[in-house]
Length: 78
Image 1 (cartoon, rainbow, N blue to C red):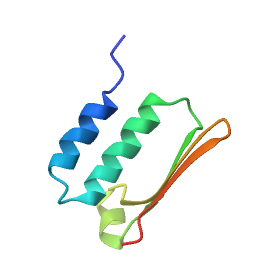
Image 2 (cartoon, helix red, strand yellow):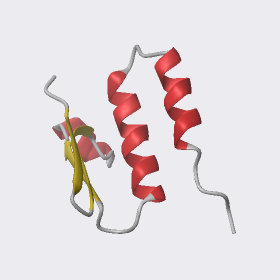
Image 3 (cartoon, rainbow, N blue to C red):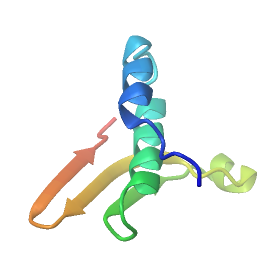
């Protein structure tokens, strides 16, 4: 079985080069979705016409993680 992704190492690497916050949030969303139980991570995205035509996922606009009574909500307002 493959080891789970190292979220801390990924976050540290991206913080060193914080020029692209959109990339950081997209990687964080993917790692959390892979590491946590199904249904606990919800990702909202906005796709431009070009992104839709190219089959790309689009930019993450919100990341919502719910674990029991705890909830983390990240919104990208740019």
